[in-house]
Image 1 (spheres, rainbow, N blue to C red):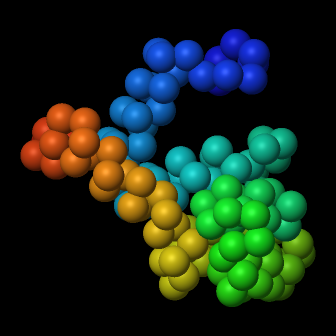
Image 2 (image 1 turned 90 degrees about the vertical axis):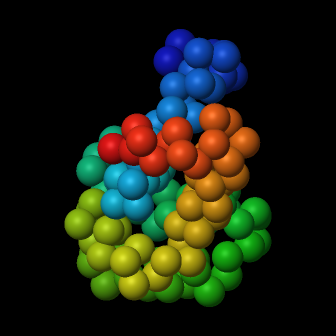
Length: 121
């Protein structure tokens, strides 16, 4: 949230909906990377990857996904830079599946698929 109060107001919610619904697959991966790079150091550490997977799949969920992502990060010094994250998600689509699914639900429920296809970036 912009004001750092710990909650999201309506404007922030609508901006988030816009950001998620207008993203193509590659842009959605960039969006997820930026959202979970919690310390803004340009890479996803293992704790940040764990946080992402647990938010996507629930605490204790996404076991195989978490194992694969952690192993991939450890092979790269314990973290994934953006290019590594994009490469990983290209071969391990199940990591981003919950976000793609959420995107499709939002598009269908808010203005419809045709509208979002016309404004996709």
